[in-house]
Length: 582
Image (tube, one colour):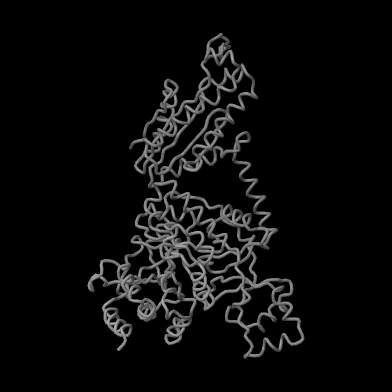
């Protein structure tokens, strides 16, 4: 018996002692089960400290691919016993399979054929952290699996140095954001900004995003806010060895979504803007496609869906016109021996979830509008319709009009309507909120002395300073005149205080440029006050009042406390804070 054969037999016995636990991956809004991830269990019982140690051992003995096929079959067989329709299995691939001398194409298809499982039910997870030295081999493996109809997910996205390159090579269907970025994302503005940017990029590329390791309600709400598609973690369920514990829907998620105390508005899309274009099933053949364009001559493309109404992509008439109008095109399409599957003609489609609202829809289209005739609309990944370019332009005009009506004409910042909404939501939020009011000191004398143009310049200097310093981490608005508003969520008072104090000092330095050299040197201007009496007024500065609001705060005290600390803040150069108590 060869050494390799003996190693395989020995490790087959070891593999028999391993099992797979499944962890649910669910829709962020509905809690409906979308997929399960297969996670190896029992490796400690056979003398390994971790899963990487286990696979390192297989790799060193050059039997990684053979053992992986045994494990793969074990996971797929167990997955097949979960009696829930339209379910995917996420299975982790070790990139080092490429370096095994016996690596070959088609073995997974044999397993699936035996079990009567479609290739689209399997998603292979490729990690950033594995060996990416031989990019050509990685690309070959990914293309093999894609061509066979399997989905591809990039696991632990953001933790490796080759993430964007792997994303480009793989043409992935899914990105899984690593737990590092999800942990306390509600408290870390940089994590939120990073993840939000990745989500936007992924959606433009037609990629869905999964957040790994969600454990708290606050993390869930932040992931929902930045439009992450699917979630996975202890908040939903721990991995389970017993498939009977896997549910069709995890009710705590839709309950969290419905009971969001922040009551955010989504600028929902009016259904009148969405037209229903009759889709075609992926199980149709080329002959059905020819007949479709004859039956619907005004349509120059058709959305393609699977048996569960999931949007898979779009086929354009121009791509099949040459064949359909050829002398033998129709006969060939009717011939069962002719390869007439639609999959080879499908192109990626630009799509949005209807719950994302108008702003996200317009943003997505603007990023790729020159490549698209419109944008498809889904609900929980199921096709519901299409918004054409004309309707998108109408939506854009309507939205811009709404924004213009609710923003300050000078600074273009949100105005009082948005401020009122922010304050109301602050009293409903589970997060600590800090509201900051800014008011210029001695602005009227400056405005009268130097003129309203210089007064407007002072206001614009402060507006630009606020946006540059705080807009990424806070809600910045303009009440009117020289009064401004900033709202922070989930920040500690000490951090807010430090940021506000910094803004006040920077403004004091920046605004001095508006004075002539004589007044700047004196440090004051001499002019009449509101009573007509000549007085000396210091150079412009800004005072601030900070109010801390928690879910236990009493809203009836708000105006009284605000008025008091705004008055008191005039007496100091530093931010003055308070909190609204029960």
